[in-house]
Image 1 (spheres, rainbow, N blue to C red):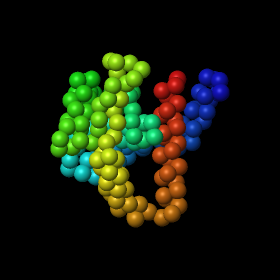
Image 2 (image 1 turned 90 degrees about the horizontal axis):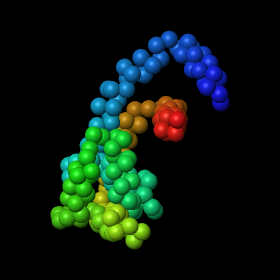
Image 3 (image 1 turned 180 degrees about the vertical axis):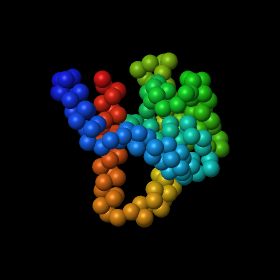
Image 4 (image 1 turned 120 degrees about the vertical axis):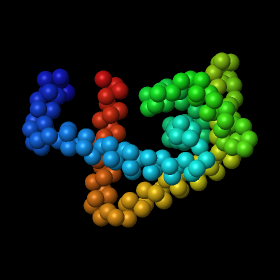
Length: 171
């Protein structure tokens, strides 16, 4: 699609629902800080901090076989989500590697002596299952108040937002 066509499409959509962007913004922060933080707290389970949960989720969702991921890839993703330093990431990973947590192992990448691979331990895999179940239970409490059509529309909406935002990174 050409830049001109994109601009025309945006202009046409913008006029279809007056103040659509402002209306979305008005809902965004309450959803993010009430529902989003609720989901995050359910995933944390009172055990981990938000950065550690994000690291585990990255390994689960983007890592090799949902079990391991290069530390640098974790760092790149987290830096785009949070204001966090490489040192803070290392500290959080080390805390998850040591007792009493022992959720991950930090192993040398065979392709680079300087790079580490973060791998879920057996205990870490079990924790991920528990973490996901806690998050799912929280979201189920929300979904229980929705019709099947609202659920379908909500899933479509989240999928489209994800696709659009992923496209921003490629521009």
